[in-house]
Length: 143
Image (cartoon, rainbow, N blue to C red; front, side):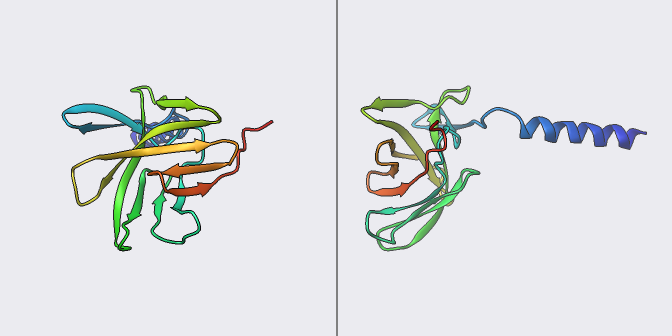
């Protein structure tokens, strides 16, 4: 009987986790606590490369992992996220037909977090990472 209760509790935990709100992770940079998420309502995950080039690339996975390739084409595995509030609401600056976010990443072989710009340009249907790496996206929210 006890194993049935444990099973039902585990099943409940999985169901709650799968329908829960945005996952938020806390990071520390320069002794200041910040919050990051991988969910901002747009398809951030994917492969980013300079316009007209195949490399160097940055790959962002939906689970907050990925890789970043340097100019010499060496790769480092990273953890990443978009800055948000403690509740998981992405922090952004709104521009004309665009939004700009703070992108945080940490190489797996380091404890240091780095930041750069991530922006979405709605009329061009493009996302820019670190100013030069880009990917096109489909806007599924258009009605």
